[in-house]
Image 1 (spheres, helix red, strand yellow):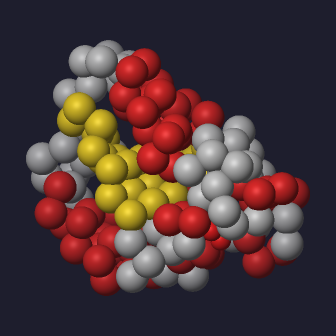
Image 2: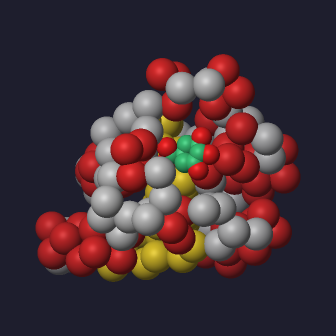
Length: 139
Ligand code: DQA
């Protein structure tokens, strides 16, 4: 089974950025734990700060992989282009957020992507990614 995690803008700074919201672990260190937990799942990781690169990645793997876990960062709230890319591919996408976006500023309450996704997981810290993988690996 192949699952792709895609992190969008500013998520390369996890562990450094706004630690009171996003915690102090880097995504790379979390990924080591996640891969250990799912030894039979091939978990690939991609991060980009560029909207078009996220779209290219969705196109590249979205007809081949078994699942995609997408934290599109702030593009979640604005990007019709990423929503269209999710709708265009076959692989199910789960939208995730580390923080509970609904407890935060009003502009974070809207997702442009959610309607094109299988579901949304938000507010469980890094564990949001594991919860998404848990769903994608259900048979
Ligand atoms: C985020 C929430 C977004 O509103 C924000 O722009 C991010 C991170 C999260 O994981 O909580 O960059 O997606």
